Image (cartoon, rainbow, N blue to C red; front, side):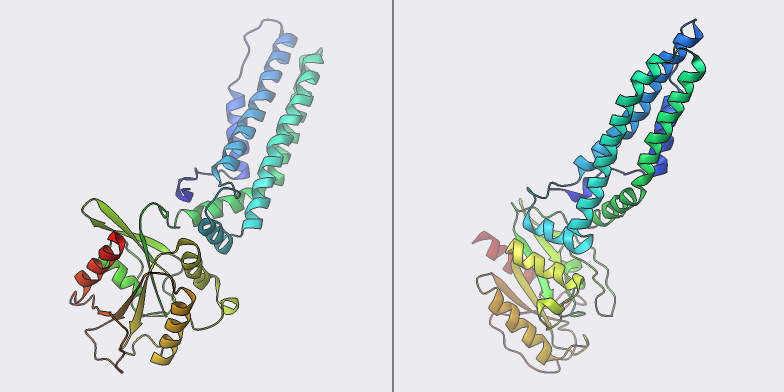
Length: 322
């Protein structure tokens, strides 16, 4: 599922303006004024209804079916916008679509039955008012869908057919910098905790193969129930995608998180995901370490002088080839 391809969604007023503008171009070239008014009113009512209902239908269909999406996508949607809130907004849009079509079905016969042009125009005006009022009732729903679309455009489009490595660790240990060094990903890099606000994706191309590499928000050493929604996005990737875990430990002390905290987080994740492929990385190796650490088969890296970058890439390739 590609959440990034949801089409542009109009506001309530944009939807109304477009529908009325298109209906204004509808004309009938019949000499009899009363008959012409009836034909024109019928076409205009149907035009307004179609130009409201069709976009609403496309909006609802553009969003994913929650019964068929990957568990990771569902988790990310719930953490970023809320599944129940999204369902409510989509339900409101679909209700409005049905309501507008029902109004048109009710008022078209009325327009056909009027004898005078004046009465016919009154019926048409009444139908317009009812249909546009329905759209205005779902203004908040449409605004929510617009916001959700904006959020989804920044979410990663993970391909389950290609291998995935998730970079994990405490905040500010250098995950984003390393992702930028080894892949096509361009995450935001700043020297304060929780720079990474959500998961993002880059790619390493190795001949004909592609390895996806995911940047995740820093994790704190605490229970899931105490973790914020940013941290939970990283946990969702680990829980639902079964990736290679690249765990970064900062030995320099510049992350703001002690070795004790980082080791505790390492032990938690290592125990929790014991059947996953795992690569231990010591980041910021160009800086003097505060204390030694001896994780098995670890790789020391530095994005400042490219130390260990190739070794990490080769380790990822080797695991993916196995």
